[in-house]
Image 1 (cartoon, one colour):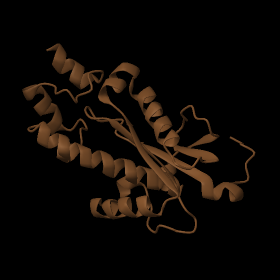
Image 2 (cartoon, helix red, strand yellow; image 1 turned 45 degrees about the horizontal axis):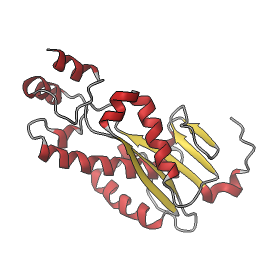
Image 3 (cartoon, helix red, strand yellow; image 1 turned 135 degrees about the vertical axis):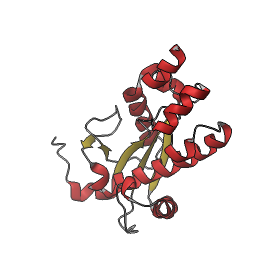
Image 4 (cartoon, rainbow, N blue to C red; image 1 turned 45 degrees about the vertical axis):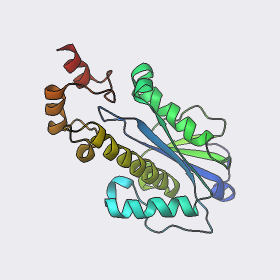
Length: 198
């Protein structure tokens, strides 16, 4: 996709955008947008899934301190159920880009499609392992969502949410059958729908 942009000129105002939480059966989908500062490099940026929890936590603080701009956004369970997970993810990405204090000249979106944005955008497949700004966004989104899932685990004990983060693991599916769905479960997802149907 040719945008007719000279990437060397816009390097400092490229927003990387990523999401975490499309697959889980509960909780929000969380997105982040980050514009890195070329004068304040951050070492060790990588796809958040490839980093240890301790490393992600350290980078989370460093990104927020050094980036030119960053924003963490989300779509709630009700929006996921109403819109479907893809559209809710696009909405959350839109919110993250619109929430940036600096307007990017280009937004690079992890994956194969872009949300509707007021700025030029391009999708980058496996972007979180290729584009540092997308890697930074993936770290902000993941740490933020993981922390929230740990809090929800306290509010809804017995499901093991802190461990599986809402993903459909055997532990989670068994607890769902035994305890039923909570208000944070996505009713449009088949395993939850099936439990409610029973």
